[in-house]
Length: 340
Ligand code: RIB
Image 1: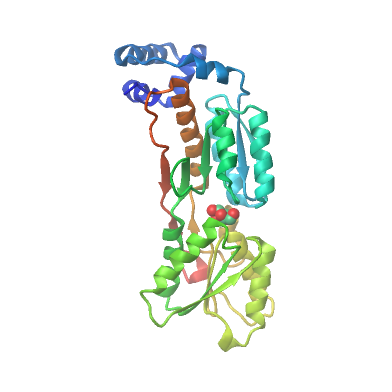
Image 2 (image 1 turned 45 degrees about the vertical axis):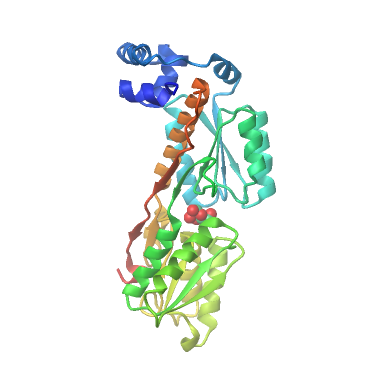
């Protein structure tokens, strides 16, 4: 099998980005590193494919990133991680916001293709595989962020959201809560569906527990507030004793809405947990428990994966490797809102 850039990187104990720099901009690399990489190239008999490199030569020094909701601090952190990693390789990040609209998402993917970016990162809203294929057929690598295609035909970086939902519900059950509610967005958003599935799995182990689903049109503070006010207007016996929100923005809204009539105390009457662990979660009036996603690491890993894919495309190995699927573990962060 042809020697890949990744093999050269491993042999020289450097990143694939450094090998790419030695191949394309050796003046930007320390002489001893150039020598070490060149020695590995010679030793392994690595042969680069100049056709792919020449195709890329006309490309802008940028990466496209399409996020679901640029107003959500989670995606701001993902973008920051991506920018920091891309800058290390002299690349800039062009940011687009699909606002959960498949049409806007497709328009950005086409725009980035026309802009001849080096690669595209996308947190899909309703990603059409054909839209991805238009990019990859044009020689533009794609990495899915915070999602994955079932068949694994595109590289991806994400957190196991089923495990995250399970962690959240299990924590509320461990606090003795039994009337749970899940406040989420459209179930068509894979992250929402997986978090709910994980919560349902946790309840299987507790027969006397129930889970009510309160679906909202989007995952924003305003939609969470509406859900919280709905709960506050109910008779006490009709209210849940714990709420798991599909993200922290919803949880901040539920905290505001549930407290508005002054009858519900969090966590005494209503335990509350969100998802993402955005910076704001720890500074709410009742600090929020949450399921942490390593947002900045997700962004940086997505760029690393994209550089690897770009470098492999440049080397054009006879038998290309399967696209890598990177999975981070979610982490339970317990604070006052769930009794921590
Ligand atoms: O966009 C909805 C949610 O999905 C975000 O809050 C983040 O959790 C992402 O995974």
